[in-house]
Length: 126
Image 1: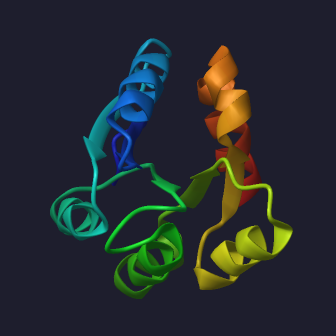
Image 2 (image 1 turned 30 degrees about the vertical axis):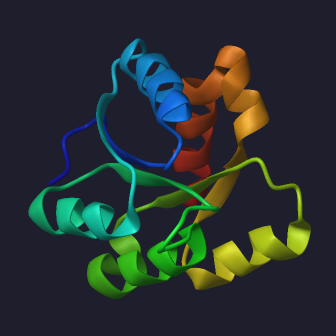
């Protein structure tokens, strides 16, 4: 069983990771963070998470591929939330088709609303 508030944050931008981590931890989430998809898959294999939050645009393994690989490994039991600055509806649709449950805009998260957005997204993912 996943710890009540443990999430995995996957993004290649260290500034964004620091901002997101601080925001989530200040709201009681336990946050593990990685910068690459391959490392995210290793973490998922080794420990339970409430959810995985993934940036869409990353080098070597983008969010679409990572979402699909998480689905292959974890099945539907682990919510996958895309974090994106992309407003391209086709790109977001592709992410949902790849296995993500829902997506959040980074612009809202940058305004300090990330914990609330994650909570709302988890409710929508159920």
